[in-house]
Length: 248
Ligand code: FPP
Image (tube, rainbow, N blue to C red):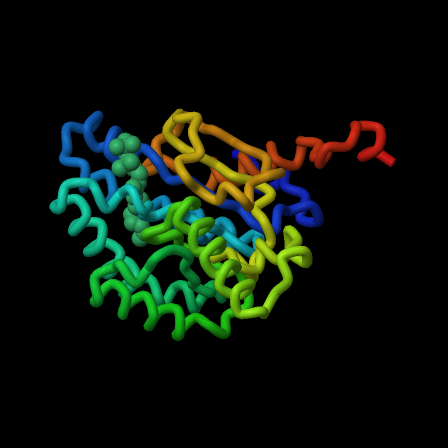
């Protein structure tokens, strides 16, 4: 069987792909199982897309793993997700290193339970020198949290005379964001048939291509990922210009 992977032009890959992994709960319900079963199966898809991104040598893959709003879910589900994070990081660190994948995070990770936070730091340190794909997990993340922090930090630096208000550019703002060392995502994918952004990377996706798939996250495979990358490569990105200007 032909794979979408063969259709991908390796010279026109996105540098950064972001994914809103959605549908774990509905997938579990459809299978007559508790919601946590969906999250457990969602880990397989996390592994699959990480491998797919590493195979293509995509520089950055950001996964929305836990939002600020997710703290308000039932304690049992929050605890299960935290446990899953620890066990996955524990079991996958070796594979990340084998695949030259570096782990980073964005979000208010200090809010995470200490064992989760410590495990993350351990994996971040262990993979820090890898030079392939950066797997960036958004944890305890929301865009409004990030924007609020940016405004607070810029205001403080203005107050302390470190920056002049008139000198503030888009690049200044980007440098105060959690994603400061990453390019903006060229492509944002959301699974599960919902057409929402849900407080994710609002500043960074100004010009991103959006792809919404009905596939529930636990059913999402490498092949789905390759298919979406191939579709992305058929799109014309105009950045506010005309088609004729872009074709020149
Ligand atoms: C959305 O589905 C998914 C989440 C809130 C969590 C995603 C977590 C994982 C895939 C597992 C752990 C992650 C890592 C990186 C090891 P939902 O629960 O909102 O589904 P629903 O909309 O159908 O209820």
